[in-house]
Image (cartoon, one colour):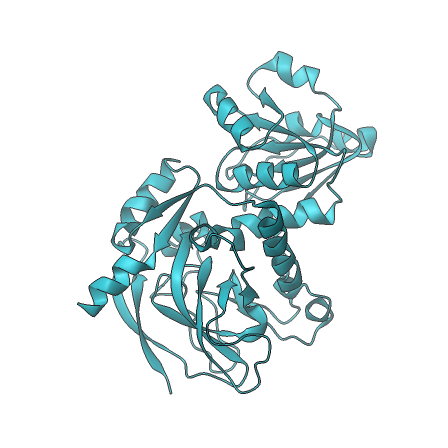
Length: 354
């Protein structure tokens, strides 16, 4: 039977998040019910709540970086059991029948994947609601195992920031001996530095902020380039095999393209909108390429979690209470976080029980 859930969400773009009660669906045969212990706060949550992408449907209960404990499973579920620690990312369903789904790229489902929130359930047409809540019900395939021994309080952002940066590094063969640059030191960029370094690459952080240089080195960067210093950019011309561009606002990519060596590639993961034009010679020269990358599929997401467990790679996190999410959103707008917020559900659940 359906269950009542408690969480925080918003009913309009110009309204703050507030406590809400809503219904979670009854457990289907291939579903997993999860008691949520931690939920990451992603910049996408803020955009969706405020309808910045002009596709929000209200009420929005955000959250697509979820960690929790399995409390029930449907009769057809064999890969999860009650008591398991699991994680859910940006999607909770897809057709599972198209070529993309069969090849482990559910994110590119030809019939449309279902977002963890602000999506449409494929079976009953209901609006999906995310992880800023006490529990969630998810199709088992979209539920990843959290490896034993991981710090569960720091796992949640891996389900978005982690896989968003891991996927392009993995797909384009970053490894021992690779010369990698990460542009922008924020929620995505700091994970790009950590992951590329763990893969064995020589990592350079490119930033406009000199003060971030020491922090970048602490995170694993071997070198730092200040992009507003022409001499430093000129000295790095043709240096890199791969550039992970995490800048979240419109910007000229030309200066960064010129840093790629022969057959080098730059992948955009931060900006989702129109970009300024650039001269094609910067691609033709040295056979360079520019592309984009979304989150990975479920197999790659599980691979990423296993990799992070093995190499002890975690995001830098600041724990907040559910009641502090509106303040966290305002701080996100000011880039006032190092580098990801995570909601610890313990205080919220205690307040609901009292």
